[in-house]
Length: 193
Image (cartoon, rainbow, N blue to C red; front, side, top):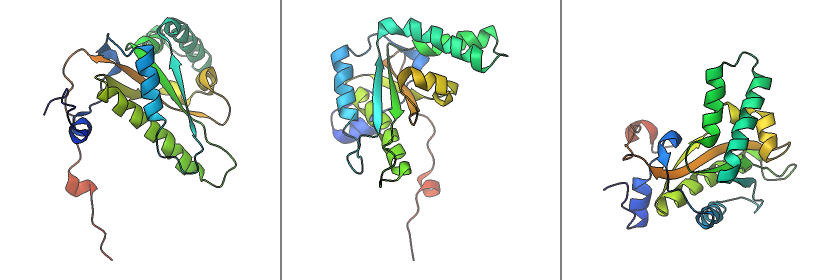
């Protein structure tokens, strides 16, 4: 079984691997492909039909502006940031050919618990990665300090929302490696009353 084997739904799921965003290169998905990926991700299970997530596609031409904003916010939030930190913040914004910022946007107050709505946002990120893989691309889902900064969040959403992830998409520059997985005996148990 190889990364490119997408011949059945099971091999699609079995072969999906995360790509390091810094190792994702062109070609990336076209605007139409990104729209299709997001439409697929929006089919995520969602108790109450609330759509408690938002997708913000950062177009290629806007990525340098995002890099400048991230460096500006880093300086404001961390006065001890080094030039290397600033370079890393700029590189974060411009790596990989495509970027989708996924926001957890819970509907509050609501009878559907906040936790369920937040889980749905995480599932939306995963479905975005599955859609990318099904279309021949790879993705990397990152958080890092920008995901926990209200100032960065405000670039994409508003109060009450949180960044669930920065999903970077593109073509792997080299074959994706299988990472170590937990032994099923350690992570799966059969309930026995």
